[in-house]
Image 1 (cartoon, rainbow, N blue to C red):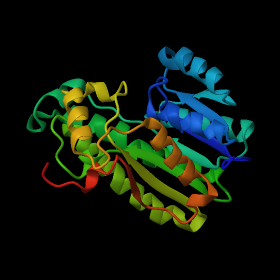
Image 2 (cartoon, rainbow, N blue to C red):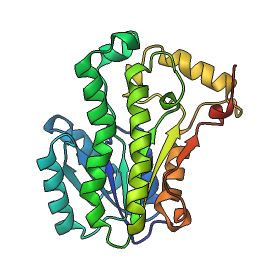
Image 3 (cartoon, helix red, strand yellow):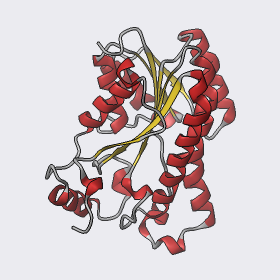
Length: 255
């Protein structure tokens, strides 16, 4: 019950195979009051079904690219929860064509879209949620090794993740005086719905398992337990960090 008495907001849950779902389940297991969001009416029914499985407290709409929806989310959270102790930003998007073609051919619109949804949205969310953390709290995002190393076919998303990690550090610096900790978890490749947009994902998973020190792929539950640590009082001294949960793959040089 590491999160007993805490209220957690998870943005970006898509289905029961997503990392956000694993994190949500771990939060409920550890006693948190869970609030989920959905992006659009098309996703509403799916997220509501997942919410029922998870026994979540609330499900609220929020498209992070629309300031008015973030404002509405905060207003509703003030009414329903009063405060937020942990917020998980599990949001990223890039056009499939910008992932499948050479990075050199990335479109201007595709580049800007990936930056807005995958990186700037963390800034927007932190700005909106911070006032709901009067006694401090934990804000987390999800990143990947492609932010600092060239990963074949990751392309524009790697650049967006680099921006995301830099944003995380600046937010950690500015929000630290409020006792709000901001961190990123860098998970190994996991076969989620969004990851399937990356060309040759299966080959990536096979190579990862072959060369990672633990000789296996990443389990979403491992990422979720790390998120619990960061959200709990056990992680009270950790901020501005990228924590790798990738079976050790990030330490390897040439395979």
